[in-house]
Image (cartoon, rainbow, N blue to C red; front, side, top):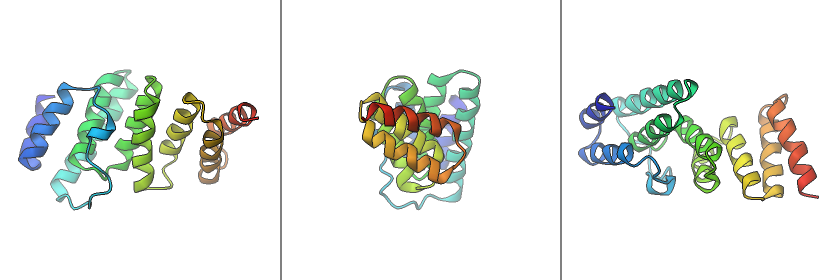
Length: 167
């Protein structure tokens, strides 16, 4: 974690380094408090690479079952570069899995605003909407997954589940 903060302080603007430290210290921080994806994506190459590397490290931690640590790093990755759609999508997925459908939905929607073809983000949206009992919206999200990934068995199951629940 110290290496990440040192990297943030050397590659990002000083405000980002302070915010990165805050995010690492406050892993429950909601996506609403993170930078908006609506701002211009004008990061310098080094900052963008730091975000990608941080997101990849979070992916590794998540695979090892360290979801809480991974979420902190995904938050840092999107703080460094709000246009890191992969980290937004993975953060959304993790938040939904931990029962935080509202923040998970917000993070996944941020990823979709960056890349409408992000299958991971659409799955997180569908799962968040299911968790909130929004079955018709979940049905539409599962349909979008199947448009993007026609043989996605997770989406096929989700589509059947949402179709039954929305009757």
